[in-house]
Length: 88
Image (tube, rainbow, N blue to C red; front, side, top):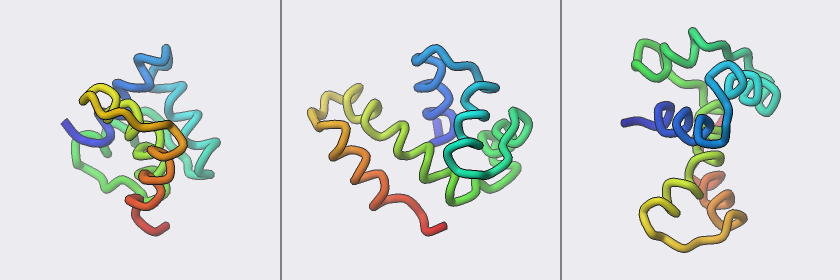
């Protein structure tokens, strides 16, 4: 399991497929992301750009903590994700 896989699973749980998740990521970050790039990031064949990593972390951290039984508000989780994201 890695950040990309976790993010995709969370997006899938929200009713989004990989294509829609890629479109959302592109719109949020200004990066070009398609399903091929995301699969390469997921497999480790390509490094995840820092902006994409930050977006995925912000979208995933709240849900991962909730699944692990940690009670935290979404704003606090988003702030923590921003603090943990790589520069970029």
